[in-house]
Length: 417
Ligand SMILES: *Cc1c(COP(=O)(O)O)cnc(C)c1O
Image (tube, rainbow, N blue to C red; front, side, top):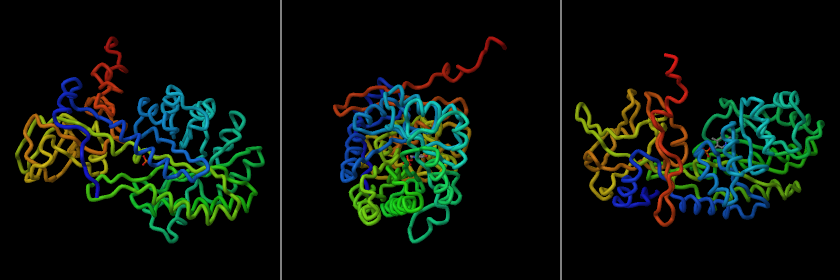
Protein backbone atom coordinates (compact mmCIF):
# COMPACT_ATOMS: atom_id res chain seq x y z
CA UNK A 1 0.00 0.00 0.00
CA UNK A 2 1.12 3.55 -0.53
CA UNK A 3 -0.75 6.75 0.10
CA UNK A 4 -1.29 8.76 -3.05
CA UNK A 5 -1.12 12.17 -1.43
CA UNK A 6 -0.06 15.44 -3.05
CA UNK A 7 2.45 17.82 -1.47
CA UNK A 8 0.29 20.92 -1.89
CA UNK A 9 -3.23 22.11 -1.09
CA UNK A 10 -5.78 23.25 -3.64
CA UNK A 11 -5.18 26.85 -2.57
CA UNK A 12 -1.41 26.51 -3.01
CA UNK A 13 -1.66 24.89 -6.41
CA UNK A 14 -4.14 27.51 -7.63
CA UNK A 15 -1.66 30.21 -6.61
CA UNK A 16 1.06 28.42 -8.58
CA UNK A 17 -1.29 28.06 -11.58
CA UNK A 18 -2.01 31.81 -11.46
CA UNK A 19 1.66 32.31 -12.36
CA UNK A 20 2.33 29.15 -14.40
CA UNK A 21 -0.74 28.04 -16.33
CA UNK A 22 -1.58 24.33 -16.64
CA UNK A 23 -0.48 21.89 -17.80
CA UNK A 24 2.90 21.50 -16.09
CA UNK A 25 4.95 18.90 -14.28
CA UNK A 26 5.92 19.88 -10.75
CA UNK A 27 8.65 18.10 -8.76
CA UNK A 28 8.97 17.97 -4.98
CA UNK A 29 12.61 18.82 -4.31
CA UNK A 30 12.84 17.77 -0.66
CA UNK A 31 11.07 14.46 -1.27
CA UNK A 32 13.55 13.58 -4.04
CA UNK A 33 16.49 14.49 -1.81
CA UNK A 34 15.14 12.50 1.16
CA UNK A 35 14.54 9.52 -1.09
CA UNK A 36 18.02 9.46 -2.62
CA UNK A 37 19.60 9.91 0.81
CA UNK A 38 17.66 6.90 2.02
CA UNK A 39 18.94 4.81 -0.91
CA UNK A 40 22.57 5.85 -0.35
CA UNK A 41 22.32 5.28 3.40
CA UNK A 42 20.91 1.78 2.89
CA UNK A 43 24.07 0.87 0.98
CA UNK A 44 26.56 2.49 3.35
CA UNK A 45 28.20 -0.94 3.93
CA UNK A 46 29.41 -0.95 0.32
CA UNK A 47 33.06 0.16 0.02
CA UNK A 48 32.07 2.77 -2.59
CA UNK A 49 28.40 2.91 -3.46
CA UNK A 50 27.29 5.10 -6.34
CA UNK A 51 23.88 5.92 -7.75
CA UNK A 52 24.09 7.10 -11.35
CA UNK A 53 20.80 8.84 -12.09
CA UNK A 54 19.45 7.73 -15.48
CA UNK A 55 19.35 11.12 -17.16
CA UNK A 56 16.73 9.99 -19.68
CA UNK A 57 14.19 9.74 -16.87
CA UNK A 58 14.22 13.50 -16.15
CA UNK A 59 16.81 15.26 -18.30
CA UNK A 60 16.67 18.57 -16.52
CA UNK A 61 19.94 20.20 -15.43
CA UNK A 62 18.40 21.57 -12.21
CA UNK A 63 17.32 18.09 -11.14
CA UNK A 64 20.78 16.75 -12.07
CA UNK A 65 22.49 19.51 -10.10
CA UNK A 66 20.35 18.86 -7.06
CA UNK A 67 21.24 15.14 -7.23
CA UNK A 68 24.91 15.93 -7.82
CA UNK A 69 24.95 17.75 -4.48
CA UNK A 70 23.87 14.44 -2.90
CA UNK A 71 26.81 12.61 -4.50
CA UNK A 72 24.75 11.15 -7.33
CA UNK A 73 26.31 10.74 -10.78
CA UNK A 74 24.72 10.33 -14.21
CA UNK A 75 23.91 7.41 -16.46
CA UNK A 76 23.90 8.62 -20.06
CA UNK A 77 23.24 7.07 -23.42
CA UNK A 78 23.20 9.94 -25.89
CA UNK A 79 25.08 13.06 -26.94
CA UNK A 80 22.46 15.38 -25.45
CA UNK A 81 22.63 13.62 -22.09
CA UNK A 82 26.43 13.90 -22.07
CA UNK A 83 26.22 17.60 -22.86
CA UNK A 84 23.77 18.07 -19.99
CA UNK A 85 26.34 16.47 -17.66
CA UNK A 86 29.03 18.79 -18.98
CA UNK A 87 26.80 21.82 -18.36
CA UNK A 88 26.06 20.69 -14.82
CA UNK A 89 29.72 19.89 -14.11
CA UNK A 90 29.30 16.12 -13.85
CA UNK A 91 32.43 14.54 -15.35
CA UNK A 92 34.87 11.65 -15.07
CA UNK A 93 33.74 8.50 -13.33
CA UNK A 94 30.66 10.31 -12.10
CA UNK A 95 29.28 9.48 -15.55
CA UNK A 96 28.63 5.99 -16.82
CA UNK A 97 27.94 5.85 -20.52
CA UNK A 98 25.55 2.89 -20.78
CA UNK A 99 24.58 3.25 -24.41
CA UNK A 100 23.79 0.89 -27.22
CA UNK A 101 24.01 1.15 -31.02
CA UNK A 102 26.25 4.16 -30.39
CA UNK A 103 27.83 6.37 -33.07
CA UNK A 104 31.49 7.18 -32.52
CA UNK A 105 30.95 10.92 -31.89
CA UNK A 106 29.11 9.97 -28.72
CA UNK A 107 31.91 7.72 -27.49
CA UNK A 108 34.32 10.52 -28.32
CA UNK A 109 32.36 12.96 -26.19
CA UNK A 110 32.06 10.43 -23.36
CA UNK A 111 35.82 9.77 -23.47
CA UNK A 112 36.56 13.50 -23.47
CA UNK A 113 34.45 13.85 -20.34
CA UNK A 114 36.33 10.91 -18.77
CA UNK A 115 33.15 8.83 -18.46
CA UNK A 116 33.15 5.13 -17.66
CA UNK A 117 32.40 3.40 -20.95
CA UNK A 118 29.99 0.51 -20.73
CA UNK A 119 30.40 -1.71 -23.80
CA UNK A 120 27.14 -3.13 -25.08
CA UNK A 121 28.80 -5.59 -27.45
CA UNK A 122 32.08 -7.39 -28.14
CA UNK A 123 32.25 -5.90 -31.65
CA UNK A 124 32.69 -2.46 -30.11
CA UNK A 125 36.30 -3.22 -29.12
CA UNK A 126 37.34 -3.14 -32.78
CA UNK A 127 34.96 -0.28 -33.49
CA UNK A 128 36.51 1.93 -30.81
CA UNK A 129 40.06 0.97 -31.76
CA UNK A 130 39.56 2.25 -35.30
CA UNK A 131 39.35 5.73 -33.86
CA UNK A 132 41.82 5.77 -31.02
CA UNK A 133 43.23 4.05 -27.95
CA UNK A 134 40.93 2.18 -25.59
CA UNK A 135 40.31 3.72 -22.17
CA UNK A 136 42.01 2.12 -19.15
CA UNK A 137 38.67 1.55 -17.45
CA UNK A 138 36.03 -0.51 -19.23
CA UNK A 139 32.70 -1.92 -18.24
CA UNK A 140 30.85 -4.62 -20.16
CA UNK A 141 27.13 -5.19 -20.26
CA UNK A 142 25.90 -8.71 -19.65
CA UNK A 143 22.79 -10.28 -21.15
CA UNK A 144 22.11 -13.59 -19.37
CA UNK A 145 19.52 -14.66 -21.96
CA UNK A 146 17.69 -17.83 -20.98
CA UNK A 147 20.21 -18.49 -18.16
CA UNK A 148 18.26 -15.96 -16.12
CA UNK A 149 15.34 -18.34 -15.71
CA UNK A 150 17.33 -20.53 -13.33
CA UNK A 151 15.63 -20.53 -10.00
CA UNK A 152 14.61 -16.93 -9.67
CA UNK A 153 11.54 -14.89 -10.15
CA UNK A 154 12.76 -12.17 -12.44
CA UNK A 155 10.18 -10.81 -14.79
CA UNK A 156 10.96 -10.45 -18.48
CA UNK A 157 12.90 -12.44 -20.99
CA UNK A 158 16.49 -11.23 -21.40
CA UNK A 159 16.89 -13.38 -24.53
CA UNK A 160 14.50 -11.03 -26.33
CA UNK A 161 16.40 -7.97 -25.24
CA UNK A 162 18.82 -6.21 -27.61
CA UNK A 163 21.22 -5.19 -24.84
CA UNK A 164 24.49 -6.61 -23.66
CA UNK A 165 26.59 -9.63 -24.57
CA UNK A 166 26.40 -13.33 -23.80
CA UNK A 167 28.48 -14.90 -21.07
CA UNK A 168 30.94 -16.37 -23.60
CA UNK A 169 31.28 -13.04 -25.42
CA UNK A 170 31.80 -11.14 -22.20
CA UNK A 171 34.62 -13.46 -21.07
CA UNK A 172 36.17 -13.26 -24.54
CA UNK A 173 35.84 -9.46 -24.59
CA UNK A 174 37.65 -9.14 -21.26
CA UNK A 175 40.38 -11.54 -22.44
CA UNK A 176 40.93 -9.36 -25.53
CA UNK A 177 40.76 -6.12 -23.56
CA UNK A 178 43.25 -7.38 -20.99
CA UNK A 179 45.62 -8.28 -23.82
CA UNK A 180 45.27 -4.77 -25.16
CA UNK A 181 46.29 -3.19 -21.87
CA UNK A 182 42.94 -2.27 -20.34
CA UNK A 183 43.56 -2.13 -16.58
CA UNK A 184 40.27 -1.77 -14.76
CA UNK A 185 37.16 -3.83 -15.40
CA UNK A 186 33.53 -3.50 -14.47
CA UNK A 187 30.35 -5.48 -15.03
CA UNK A 188 26.92 -4.13 -15.89
CA UNK A 189 23.50 -5.57 -16.44
CA UNK A 190 19.91 -4.48 -16.49
CA UNK A 191 17.43 -7.27 -16.79
CA UNK A 192 14.46 -5.93 -14.89
CA UNK A 193 12.35 -2.83 -15.23
CA UNK A 194 9.89 -1.31 -12.80
CA UNK A 195 10.54 -4.22 -10.43
CA UNK A 196 8.73 -3.95 -7.11
CA UNK A 197 9.90 -7.29 -5.76
CA UNK A 198 13.22 -6.86 -3.96
CA UNK A 199 14.06 -10.53 -4.64
CA UNK A 200 14.12 -9.92 -8.38
CA UNK A 201 16.74 -7.21 -7.85
CA UNK A 202 18.67 -9.25 -5.27
CA UNK A 203 18.87 -12.23 -7.63
CA UNK A 204 20.33 -9.98 -10.31
CA UNK A 205 23.08 -9.02 -7.86
CA UNK A 206 23.74 -12.69 -7.05
CA UNK A 207 24.08 -13.47 -10.75
CA UNK A 208 26.56 -10.62 -11.18
CA UNK A 209 28.66 -11.66 -8.19
CA UNK A 210 28.90 -15.18 -9.61
CA UNK A 211 29.95 -13.72 -12.94
CA UNK A 212 32.65 -11.64 -11.25
CA UNK A 213 34.06 -14.78 -9.66
CA UNK A 214 33.95 -16.59 -13.02
CA UNK A 215 35.86 -13.73 -14.65
CA UNK A 216 38.46 -13.97 -11.88
CA UNK A 217 38.82 -17.72 -12.26
CA UNK A 218 38.98 -17.74 -16.06
CA UNK A 219 41.02 -14.61 -16.69
CA UNK A 220 42.69 -13.61 -13.45
CA UNK A 221 40.89 -10.28 -13.65
CA UNK A 222 39.58 -8.79 -10.41
CA UNK A 223 36.42 -6.88 -11.23
CA UNK A 224 36.51 -3.43 -9.60
CA UNK A 225 32.95 -2.27 -10.07
CA UNK A 226 29.53 -3.78 -10.65
CA UNK A 227 26.61 -1.75 -11.93
CA UNK A 228 23.15 -3.28 -11.52
CA UNK A 229 21.50 -0.82 -13.91
CA UNK A 230 18.15 0.74 -13.14
CA UNK A 231 14.88 -1.01 -12.67
CA UNK A 232 13.85 -0.40 -9.05
CA UNK A 233 10.12 -0.10 -9.43
CA UNK A 234 7.56 2.54 -8.58
CA UNK A 235 4.25 1.53 -6.98
CA UNK A 236 2.04 3.35 -9.47
CA UNK A 237 -1.08 1.77 -7.98
CA UNK A 238 -2.12 2.63 -4.43
CA UNK A 239 -2.34 -1.06 -3.53
CA UNK A 240 1.33 -1.59 -4.45
CA UNK A 241 4.26 -0.89 -2.11
CA UNK A 242 7.62 0.80 -2.44
CA UNK A 243 10.75 -1.37 -2.60
CA UNK A 244 12.30 -1.27 0.87
CA UNK A 245 15.89 -0.14 0.26
CA UNK A 246 17.07 -1.72 3.53
CA UNK A 247 15.64 -5.12 2.54
CA UNK A 248 17.19 -4.77 -0.91
CA UNK A 249 20.55 -3.81 0.54
CA UNK A 250 20.55 -6.61 3.13
CA UNK A 251 19.70 -9.16 0.44
CA UNK A 252 22.54 -7.97 -1.77
CA UNK A 253 24.97 -7.89 1.17
CA UNK A 254 24.17 -11.50 1.97
CA UNK A 255 25.37 -12.59 -1.48
CA UNK A 256 28.31 -10.15 -1.46
CA UNK A 257 29.53 -11.77 1.74
CA UNK A 258 28.84 -15.30 0.50
CA UNK A 259 30.19 -15.02 -3.04
CA UNK A 260 32.57 -12.07 -3.27
CA UNK A 261 34.34 -12.28 0.09
CA UNK A 262 35.68 -15.83 -0.33
CA UNK A 263 37.11 -14.78 -3.71
CA UNK A 264 38.89 -11.84 -2.12
CA UNK A 265 36.66 -9.41 -4.05
CA UNK A 266 36.04 -7.22 -1.05
CA UNK A 267 36.57 -3.69 -2.33
CA UNK A 268 34.26 -3.83 -5.31
CA UNK A 269 32.28 -0.70 -5.94
CA UNK A 270 28.56 -1.28 -6.44
CA UNK A 271 26.19 1.00 -8.27
CA UNK A 272 22.70 1.46 -9.60
CA UNK A 273 21.46 3.53 -12.51
CA UNK A 274 17.99 4.18 -11.21
CA UNK A 275 15.86 6.85 -12.75
CA UNK A 276 12.25 5.93 -12.06
CA UNK A 277 12.72 5.15 -8.37
CA UNK A 278 14.62 8.38 -7.69
CA UNK A 279 12.33 11.06 -9.10
CA UNK A 280 9.26 9.19 -10.35
CA UNK A 281 7.02 9.29 -7.28
CA UNK A 282 7.84 12.96 -6.59
CA UNK A 283 6.62 14.47 -9.85
CA UNK A 284 3.02 15.41 -10.68
CA UNK A 285 1.37 16.44 -13.92
CA UNK A 286 -1.06 19.21 -13.06
CA UNK A 287 -3.87 19.78 -15.53
CA UNK A 288 -7.25 21.54 -15.68
CA UNK A 289 -10.54 19.88 -16.63
CA UNK A 290 -11.81 21.94 -19.55
CA UNK A 291 -14.64 19.85 -21.03
CA UNK A 292 -16.98 17.07 -20.17
CA UNK A 293 -19.05 15.06 -22.54
CA UNK A 294 -21.55 12.30 -22.23
CA UNK A 295 -21.96 9.87 -25.12
CA UNK A 296 -21.69 6.11 -24.65
CA UNK A 297 -19.37 6.86 -21.75
CA UNK A 298 -18.53 9.83 -19.55
CA UNK A 299 -15.48 11.80 -20.67
CA UNK A 300 -13.51 14.49 -18.90
CA UNK A 301 -11.28 16.46 -21.29
CA UNK A 302 -8.20 18.04 -19.71
CA UNK A 303 -5.67 20.55 -21.03
CA UNK A 304 -2.79 18.04 -20.91
CA UNK A 305 -2.46 15.26 -23.44
CA UNK A 306 -0.46 12.13 -24.11
CA UNK A 307 2.20 14.48 -25.48
CA UNK A 308 2.86 15.45 -21.84
CA UNK A 309 2.73 11.92 -20.44
CA UNK A 310 2.92 9.03 -22.82
CA UNK A 311 2.87 6.06 -20.44
CA UNK A 312 -0.91 5.53 -20.13
CA UNK A 313 -1.50 5.80 -23.88
CA UNK A 314 1.56 3.77 -24.85
CA UNK A 315 1.54 0.97 -22.27
CA UNK A 316 -1.90 1.29 -20.72
CA UNK A 317 0.02 2.27 -17.57
CA UNK A 318 -1.94 3.23 -14.46
CA UNK A 319 -1.34 6.71 -13.07
CA UNK A 320 -3.31 7.70 -10.00
CA UNK A 321 -5.41 10.88 -10.27
CA UNK A 322 -6.34 13.26 -7.47
CA UNK A 323 -9.02 15.90 -8.00
CA UNK A 324 -7.88 18.87 -5.94
CA UNK A 325 -10.26 19.85 -3.17
CA UNK A 326 -12.17 16.57 -3.59
CA UNK A 327 -9.58 14.30 -1.99
CA UNK A 328 -12.13 12.91 0.45
CA UNK A 329 -15.21 13.07 -1.76
CA UNK A 330 -16.85 9.76 -2.72
CA UNK A 331 -15.54 8.28 -5.98
CA UNK A 332 -19.03 7.77 -7.31
CA UNK A 333 -18.45 8.67 -10.97
CA UNK A 334 -16.79 6.54 -13.63
CA UNK A 335 -14.79 8.59 -16.13
CA UNK A 336 -12.39 8.36 -19.01
CA UNK A 337 -9.95 11.25 -18.60
CA UNK A 338 -8.74 12.31 -22.03
CA UNK A 339 -6.34 14.63 -23.79
CA UNK A 340 -6.94 16.36 -27.11
CA UNK A 341 -4.82 14.27 -29.50
CA UNK A 342 -6.61 12.82 -32.48
CA UNK A 343 -5.67 9.39 -31.18
CA UNK A 344 -8.12 7.39 -29.17
CA UNK A 345 -5.35 6.11 -26.90
CA UNK A 346 -4.90 9.66 -25.58
CA UNK A 347 -6.47 8.82 -22.24
CA UNK A 348 -4.94 9.28 -18.80
CA UNK A 349 -7.51 6.97 -17.25
CA UNK A 350 -10.20 4.61 -18.50
CA UNK A 351 -13.29 3.67 -16.49
CA UNK A 352 -11.75 5.27 -13.40
CA UNK A 353 -13.90 5.84 -10.32
CA UNK A 354 -13.41 9.49 -9.37
CA UNK A 355 -15.38 12.16 -7.56
CA UNK A 356 -17.68 14.28 -9.71
CA UNK A 357 -15.49 16.52 -11.87
CA UNK A 358 -16.58 19.97 -13.02
CA UNK A 359 -14.97 22.15 -15.67
CA UNK A 360 -12.22 24.17 -14.02
CA UNK A 361 -11.31 21.46 -11.51
CA UNK A 362 -7.59 20.80 -11.09
CA UNK A 363 -6.52 17.22 -11.68
CA UNK A 364 -3.17 15.96 -10.44
CA UNK A 365 -1.77 12.95 -12.25
CA UNK A 366 0.68 11.15 -9.95
CA UNK A 367 4.10 9.59 -10.43
CA UNK A 368 5.22 11.61 -13.44
CA UNK A 369 8.66 12.55 -12.09
CA UNK A 370 10.47 10.04 -14.32
CA UNK A 371 9.78 9.03 -17.91
CA UNK A 372 7.06 11.70 -17.90
CA UNK A 373 7.98 15.04 -19.44
CA UNK A 374 11.05 13.41 -20.97
CA UNK A 375 8.98 11.09 -23.15
CA UNK A 376 6.99 14.05 -24.46
CA UNK A 377 6.53 14.63 -28.15
CA UNK A 378 4.99 17.08 -30.59
CA UNK A 379 2.53 14.98 -32.59
CA UNK A 380 -0.57 16.93 -33.60
CA UNK A 381 1.42 20.10 -32.97
CA UNK A 382 1.14 19.64 -29.21
CA UNK A 383 3.58 21.59 -27.07
CA UNK A 384 5.63 20.18 -24.24
CA UNK A 385 4.81 21.74 -20.91
CA UNK A 386 6.87 23.62 -18.37
CA UNK A 387 8.63 21.87 -15.48
CA UNK A 388 8.48 23.41 -12.01
CA UNK A 389 10.52 22.63 -8.93
CA UNK A 390 8.76 23.05 -5.59
CA UNK A 391 11.16 23.78 -2.74
CA UNK A 392 10.81 22.73 0.90
CA UNK A 393 9.39 26.16 1.82
CA UNK A 394 6.63 25.85 -0.78
CA UNK A 395 8.16 28.32 -3.22
CA UNK A 396 8.44 27.31 -6.84
CA UNK A 397 11.09 27.75 -9.53
CA UNK A 398 10.36 27.20 -13.18
CA UNK A 399 13.16 24.89 -14.32
CA UNK A 400 11.98 24.62 -17.91
CA UNK A 401 9.53 26.90 -19.65
CA UNK A 402 6.73 25.47 -21.74
CA UNK A 403 7.25 25.26 -25.49
CA UNK A 404 5.72 27.87 -27.76
CA UNK A 405 4.50 27.51 -31.32
CA UNK A 406 7.69 29.31 -32.35
CA UNK A 407 9.75 26.52 -30.74
CA UNK A 408 7.72 24.03 -32.72
CA UNK A 409 8.36 25.89 -35.97
CA UNK A 410 12.02 26.67 -35.27
CA UNK A 411 13.19 24.07 -37.78
CA UNK A 412 10.99 25.40 -40.60
CA UNK A 413 11.96 28.22 -42.95
CA UNK A 414 8.73 29.87 -44.02
CA UNK A 415 10.56 32.43 -46.18
CA UNK A 416 11.12 29.88 -48.95
CA UNK A 417 7.45 29.17 -49.42
C1 LIG B 1 16.40 3.22 -18.78
C2 LIG B 1 17.67 2.78 -18.16
C3 LIG B 1 17.90 3.00 -16.80
C4 LIG B 1 16.88 3.60 -15.87
O1 LIG B 1 15.78 2.79 -15.71
P1 LIG B 1 14.70 3.11 -14.55
O2 LIG B 1 13.55 2.23 -14.87
O3 LIG B 1 14.36 4.56 -14.71
O4 LIG B 1 15.35 2.83 -13.26
C5 LIG B 1 19.15 2.67 -16.30
N1 LIG B 1 20.11 2.14 -17.09
C6 LIG B 1 19.91 1.90 -18.39
C7 LIG B 1 21.02 1.33 -19.20
C8 LIG B 1 18.68 2.20 -18.98
O5 LIG B 1 18.48 1.95 -20.27
